[in-house]
Length: 193
Image (tube, rainbow, N blue to C red; front, side, top):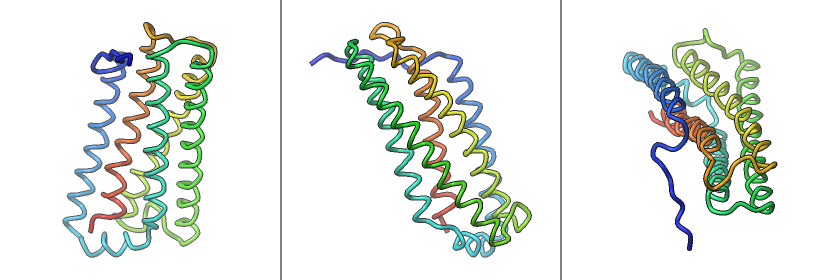
């Protein structure tokens, strides 16, 4: 079996600067959330019960599956370069984009549902953090889907090879960061009481 050679960190160095800045930004939001929660645990716990944990869990599975598809696409390109491989990798990226779209639709329906219930940024501190964090993440998913689309277009025409796939790894690294942020957001906002 052909061993896939990977450089660490994968992708372009510049994406890692962006990823670290994004993680730091979200980390500060998380610290603010935790600090505010400590000040009014009852309010935060009561507000959390108004969220749909099942929907949050479904979104978690969706994003994890999309990341799996991205990994499959990268590994295909890194191991073999044939027309069939480009087609298969391209399809995995389309799958990841589609799952990202489903995530956005489900999140949007959740946002609309909250607004219809009269819940918004100014309802209380919990919902201020809920909307700020999840909307900020929503925008990152949207940007990630645009990146994945560009990767898919280049993959489809054979623009990445075993020896030249740094752009593909760069975009994949960004998408994995988006998933990592959700993996922290989901329990923090939806589950931990």
